Length: 364
Ligand code: SMG
Ligand code: MG
Image (cartoon, rainbow, N blue to C red; front, side, top):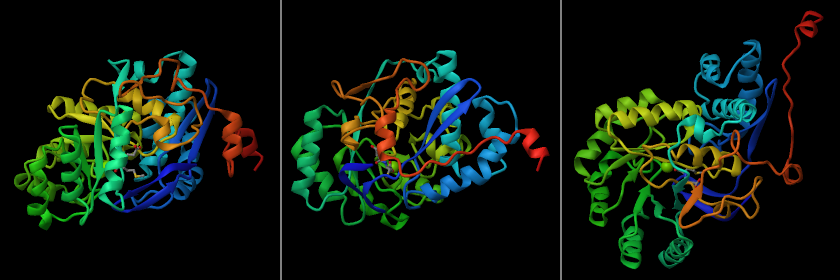
């Protein structure tokens, strides 16, 4: 799917998403999962073709071998396979959707949502010039977004932040470096303290958790971790080390909505606020993310933007921004309907993986 506008981060420019969807056909009914891995392994080590491979050859066979299961079993069954959180998350999401569609419960209700709509922010990519950036930010503010996140990298940080502050006053503002700095940049990053940012997201490489704690002693602005937080254990460790004061939760990055909820709970118990990240999801992933963003410790606006921020046409009914908020779907499961005709038009390939019947296996 083509993006409505190119999205540049410190690791490259994206103009489209090659999207891997997973449809689970279970005894309870059907459910959908969206794999958030990108085309290239640049945000993390996962990428969409690799995710498809590991799903087909390593994850789904294990799932099928385990016999009858519920969504709450998926992570444990897949644990022997290391990593591949985005692929695992897609399976768990599809199984959970099938389960909840059949029981009539919404994702929000199941996860523990306490709000019927959520405050939305928008993530603004690196632009060629500051006037172009200001035009984009102004357009999003006119649409009602409640928080702006600027992507930064060395050479595109203090000046764009200053320009946005000067033009748009005290709009809630934060930055995301996607690991582009090193701890020796601490003094430079501290220059951002002058702009009263909500947070600085993932300034250093994901494995450099201790260096984030060191950075936090030099920079006054709160440090938020994204790429580093791959599990609830990683979240607990990072908090204890003083490496972050805020956490960005992305279900895909941590193996699914159930682990994401554990991170929410760990953070809540430590008084650490969280917010919902985004991976340019379609209406499917957006539905799950918006539901999760309605949990009580999601106290900062998320990268849960409206469908038209990403795609001219979504594969579900579009999510529309109203007064800077999106409504949490209330219907069973994800609560959105896939436009199968449109999906069919934009689908490049379909691969079906079936559970082998025991008789067939016995017959060789
Ligand atoms: O979904 O609105 C969105 C994108 C939010 O900036 C965003 N995501 O590191 O937080 C992040 C990036 C990673 C996605 S790059 C494809
Ligand atoms: Mg990020």
